[in-house]
Amino acid sequence: MVLSLFGGNRHMHHFATEHDVAEELFTLLSEARVIYLQDVIKSGKRYDRYVDDFVHSHRYINCNNAVCRNCHEMNIHIVKGLLHDCAGLVRKYFTADSFSFEDCMRLKWKYNFYESSSPGSPGADNPTRVPPLSFGCNFSREQMKDIVACATAFHLFCVSTLCIEDMEALFSCRENFSIRVNNVRHVAVMFDALLENRLIEPYWQSVLDKGRFLVSKDGRSYVSASSLSTALSIARIKKTAAANGIRKAIAGLKE
Image (cartoon, rainbow, N blue to C red; front, top):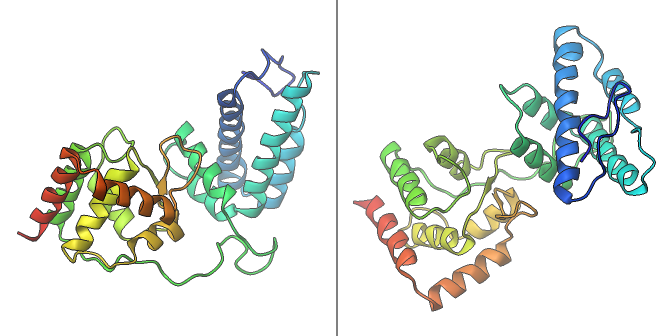
């Protein structure tokens, strides 16, 4: 991994794993965020000037190893694409209170599936216009608490502490929200149980797919409608205590 790339510092050791590449991307975006807040937000520098200056000042590394140079070039390409084509997403993440490695990976995921009009045209910072996504639900605060309790008890998502705000963002189809799934089968069971109890509409798989709200456990892809459908079919055949527990918990939402 490259521990320090900038300001003439030495290239510490070579890239060896995909995680090393991800760590360098995090290093680059973290520095881009610091400079963005200082130069653009605080000092009023033109955003396009900021992008050009950052990319050109971080283009090369002090290493002749072909693998390292290729990995760095790929990361610079991602950074340039994010800053140039996805300014709206960048603004959201860079102006947040903090920027973690997980935020970096989430930003990269969104970049991989991002669609924009040509740079400089109206709406260039926004994804292609689509009808608003909705599960057709209207949960009370108490119901939302019970959903969080169910998801926590059966470890449905890969978060240290699941909160109501996470589930509110998911069920309101909040733009740019995504959450890592710990067990696709159990998540599919939860949504199927919500449908059985007439708490959401039948097209929930399509909504989750189009909104890209669910991320696979390894963080490499979004969970598709076909994956959810397959997982649900298996869950219906191979019934487990966990699946039964999830269905029972969701059925209790109507009480």
